[in-house]
Image (cartoon, rainbow, N blue to C red; front, side, top):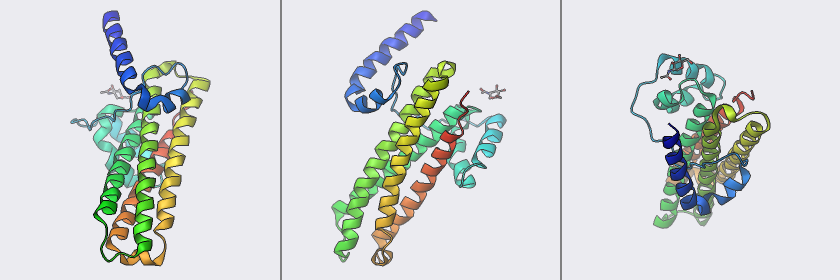
Length: 225
Ligand SMILES: *[C@@H]1O[C@H](CO)[C@@H](O)[C@H](O)[C@H]1NC(C)=O
């Protein structure tokens, strides 16, 4: 048991060194106790959610603004979170990050492909959205990493430590929301409605905003004791 823990600690410190440069900003935000920043998203597990997870998710999603989107997006993770608020919030942040990443890739693609026949205004807004989506995607990843650290602390996370981690997670999500809102506002002018590329980005941003809102609700619901 102890050997396994030490081996795991060695692996952790090695992987920490390898990713240290990338996570230095987030690591400095974390409490000293946060030993292993894990930015790797959970892969979608191939398993069925136990009935306890189904009931828990129904109940938690009912407190969000998008009950059905929440349930459908997160039920595939049922066996990882079961009845854990932190694990559920982490799954929501992972799903949100993946969504924003695909938005980021798609908008970049639209920018590099160019849009013959698009007005210069539309092209400029899509360019802005590409950069907003890229930042938002990074912010959602930071949120997931913060929740992964909180999850790794388990019962050791108490009081100020827990509040600090939650506050960081909420700060990252708020930043993502600001990015999404900036993109959505940019696309709100009438010229955008006639552009297929702009319409596609609008639809994606609307969905991404829902996922971010869901993640925020679930982070807010993490009990402080
Ligand atoms: C899931 O949570 C329930 C209730 O908290 C518990 O009884 C059950 O053993 C857990 N199942 C798994 C697979 O962890």
